[in-house]
Image (cartoon, rainbow, N blue to C red; front, side):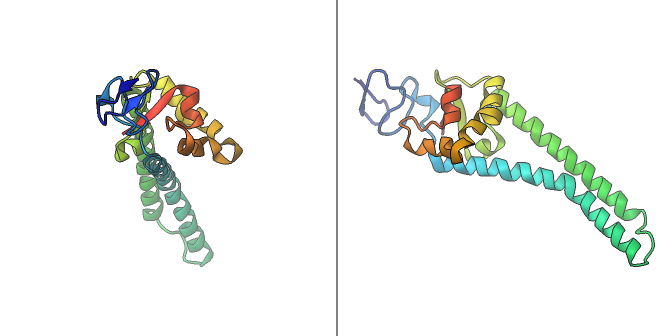
Length: 180
């Protein structure tokens, strides 16, 4: 048995995480297992940021089409140059923001083991040895293994609630943990 450096609880010699406080036993500086609600919040933020960028990219073109179409049908003539110019500008800015989000997410993947939502919430992904996952590991975990977790009505995500190490199926597939 090994004692937890944080709370003093006796843990099995093969345990990576304290059964009581969830701290990483090999190096307490790494942190403790993230609570499921924080993980859910980070995923929600990632989805909102992504969808917001998509909307900012598409919406100006749609609004321009509606305005131009209604101006032409009402007999008001052409909507002028200003509306399409503004819409085009907003579309370019929206697309630039979308690309910036993608670059930010990819940089966080490779350098810190996080997504933008995880960064905001203050959690990150680690390998089973406590190191930061590689870019490839994060890419597969976030964009492929999470699809596996969503199969069978999302049970792979719900698995976090019942797993001793708070791992979802995507974590188990990639040998990762989420820590605060």
